[in-house]
Length: 455
Image 1: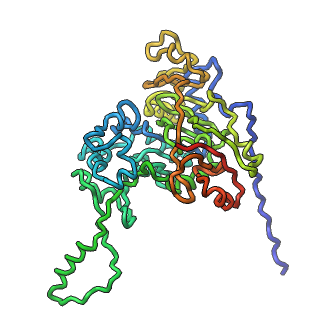
Image 2: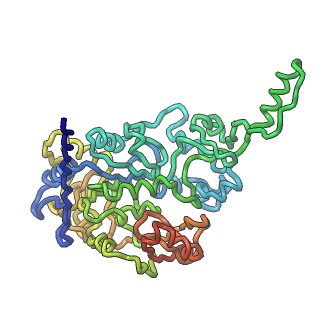
């Protein structure tokens, strides 16, 4: 019997979408459109996406009773530095300061772990549930959260879709033996304002002495107390002076070519390197901002912006064709919960309701909620801005110049002076000393590096 002929499987040809740099990837509506048309367009866009990447900040947790860090009512503004023995509020999360004396942090820690009191649990907001809904509908690629409260997972976002860019309060790590323990292990110390110490037994290298049976139990009790690690337990939060976890970089690099839309929600984009996610992702994917104020990709103090001879044509194709007034395709301004509720309502019911907010291009001069005069100065196209309750105008010229504290991925030391940044990778930095050798080993020397000054 002749052998059966092998069937060749037909491989589906992948269609590559060619982006015209002169045409915006996503347009809400015409200049004469309405709020109902604009919110419907946003909902329709999300319905067509399967790999949405989300960058979330403190704004999605404020309604839960958790203060943000940098607003006038935020943690830094209300913290009593003098009482805690701090030179400035930022010292609370400074690694060197914590290493010298962790007691100020743990005197204040109860406010972080139990913002509503020790007997009341913090519940997720509608914005957290919106992210969980995206996963339930198989539209979510990843959530990169700058928050440390873990409310995204409590709301239903699976751990495999979560990346905690700045760590989390859900765990703690021993500064001595590096063991990780759940937050429940240190809750007792936090409630008392005491520094929690590692209770993991040390591994004794010496041979155990032979003890008489009558004294064995007593000796074991004494030995167990003496052999406890006793190291300071540091919360799983990324402090100033620490590098981001490798998972952040690896996940972003893996998601770079998968993401088909970006949602930036509840963040000021003021903390590097996560503030650079917008520039890192392909400019061809639609970008949606959900925030109380208009934010844009930070402008860094870049004295030199050059690449090595390894720069290829692919790098040029990845350059962002968007101008300063075109950071996002849609600006949904207001309280995050109000915005997400309106978007979810439109996605589920397609009601085309127009009572949740106003489209800036259709805003009347005598509007009783939003000041048309304040928003008229915005250089962002008005048919791209949707105003919801809580929207706050911020002048476009209120741009801040950002400096970044970078650590060398070679020697692990803080970089002073100029920093060499890999153009293709996210947050891979080298100092001037390590650059000549390690740049040749990094991806076989095929990646190019840009030069930026560092604070």
